[in-house]
Length: 201
Image (cartoon, rainbow, N blue to C red; front, side, top):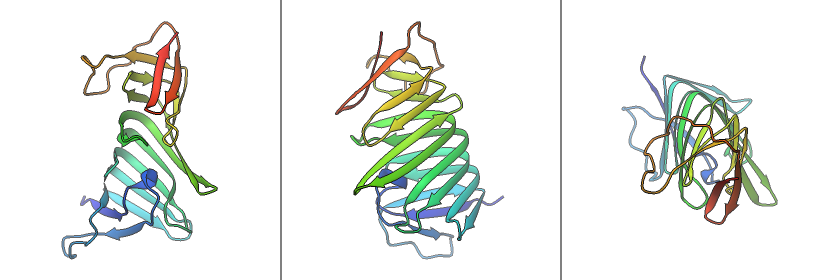
């Protein structure tokens, strides 16, 4: 089955930056777009509901964006009718991702389900990413494993339920997500300006 390629043009994908979103379905017969910053979603099929502003991508879904790479089997995105940005997004089916936080640090992870939400209050945008179904989140301190992980990209705050931590040092930090290992004590998660800081007690 031929893949459907959907290209989004904005400064950054999803809520990584909040600017106007334009959707263009591209093919080899079209002229190259003139926009420089391109975020692309590929999938086996795509569905659009104009009334509800819901976009659904199904089958080998891949997102390639300046500050987000994500793969999953199904992606549902709700587009705001007022400013054309993504209000929420749900990815399911072996979700893997690499994102950049507010300090431009790369954060890697995987989960069975990822829920993204963006809310704006008094000209301030808050972005949260919720990981469910055996989630794993990599940080500078190691790999966080939990039943549920909520990452606030704006503040750098990480909340985890039934958390376990696999600690690493800079010398032996892995290039991949390691097999989860359970610690004897639950971790305490703290934050500072440089991003999430995770310690154990």
